[in-house]
Image (cartoon, rainbow, N blue to C red):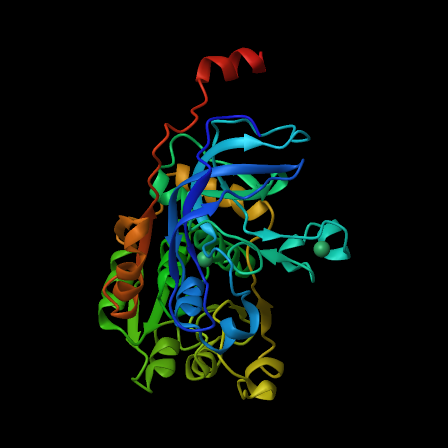
Amino acid sequence: MAGNFPDTMRAIKKLDDAPGLNWCDAVPLPAIGPRQVLVAVTHAGICGTDRHIYEWDAWSRGRVQVGITTGHEFVGRVAAVGPAVANVQVGQRVSAEGHIGCGHCQPCRTGNGHICERVDILGIDIDGCFAQYVAVPEENVWPVHPDIPDHVAAVFDPLGNAMHTVMAAGVSGRSVLITGVGVIGLMAVTIARAAGAGRILVTDVNPARLDLARQLGADQTFLSHDEQWPGKARQATGNQGPEVLLEMSGHPAAIRQGFAALRNGGTAALLGLPSDRVSFDLANDIIFKGATVLGINGRLMFETWYQVESFLLSGRLNLEPIITHHIGLDEFQRGFQLMQAGQAIKVILEVPHQEPLPCQTPALTSAAAS
Ligand SMILES: [Zn+2]
Ligand SMILES: [Zn+2]
């Protein structure tokens, strides 16, 4: 591997079968295969998934390999490429799709690699991006448009979750109910507004989040513990109910109430993950209602990424109130604590490098292209 690299790097790892994450000062750089790319990470987003791993809940204990480097949302500079890499160059500013499909199964071969049965996810199944360097396959790399700032490029992954949910449901000209406005729910509000949604209704347990949802374009908000809210949501949409439900909470009561509010013939897109099985009135809330139900997982590769870029470049998304904190990689404990305390929405970790990062010279690129 050519280039000016340190021998070791700093990384945040899951070293113990117990809550918490470990700061490691000197771990080996990831090795790259012939078709892989080594990225010097400059900014990484802390996700709810990382918080599950930090808290070491039942899901993480059953899924995450002890010893792994965590993190899957990032932007950085390409530092090295394997000998068979054809289209990615050292110095390019890139993010990457964190779902690494097998490339051979039926979903992978029909453009559905996000639901590959043998998918490896960065920071869950393989070493992730809470480190100075991360290795990813060339086909997962997403070159970042120069007009998109680093802290926004670092959150393409959750923004893509929100985009995939909104676009799958189809919100243009339709009334929309969003149940749960954590990071992705709030992103869905600004995307739905930009995508030409009709009336946008939002529920959450947290009044401050509802205020923020209104700032981002929601027309009407309801506190989740107001049991009358599904009736009020129906009243607010011509006594018929919202045409689209975007379920972002994973909370059983919100799921049931969301479906109760949904209009006959409406579409529900479900992204929020319940922590256990949910009992549900299938007959009344889906069958007799004639509802269309969509399970949403990850992002379409790479249709969703093009949509995210296009919406960002249109200037119509408002993400600044959602990205609340920028802290150093070594301050990650404080980042998780801010999230647990409900003081932070999206926290960006800034990753320091001693060596100057490779930087592509634009003149060289245009000469090569002409
Ligand atoms: Zn994430
Ligand atoms: Zn596959």
